[in-house]
Length: 291
Image (cartoon, helix red, strand yellow):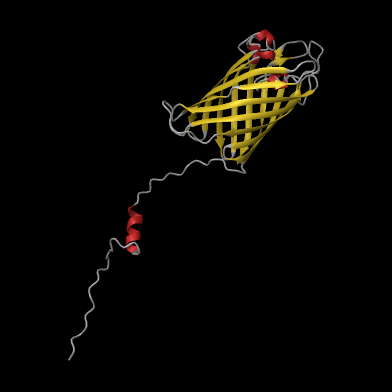
């Protein structure tokens, strides 16, 4: 009589080591891997866009030459389209929604300042350099074509919207630099050269805006702003139109809405556009949709 066949014992929790085809091996390696990846903040991709407007309350003169905040009210309509994550096409149309009908010199300011269309392209993130954390330096170029009133391209975004004369084409080239000084602090410097046609002669100037930015998480940031703007034909004196603005701002992002508020003086130099420093106080509010 043949002996009964006995099935070999197989443990219920058996594991197979070294066999890549084994399900238990795959399960063991999957569960052993620690989940260290953290979700990253959303970065702009090709096809994204931002759109909004900036309300500006700069100090400027009335018909009698007296400076006050509400003599001029300006709105800048803005839009940004992301051609690529590091390349943007931008548009800006400044509008003086409230201004004096006539100035003391007999000039009549205009409401629509014209437009500026500009392209910004940044290089890929750079490798680490001495004193600069890796992948935290931005360098790029900005090219702007404008068609604006006489001399309007020489104004900063802190100045009152003085739109006089006829429209003339203009060009601006700028170097975009942004360095991360620490995990919370960034420094931005954007020197630019501006040239624009004029009624009798062309205009040329240098503009150097800079900012020290403190980021308080992904939703809040503050900034200290300083800008050196020459007058026509590179004159730095206040009497010749030179200005040095200084101020601060707060930016808050709530969902797809980004809100910005700033306060400062449009010029620390007196003469020219501003008889005194107190005459150049500005307030700006900016709200835009960020996709």
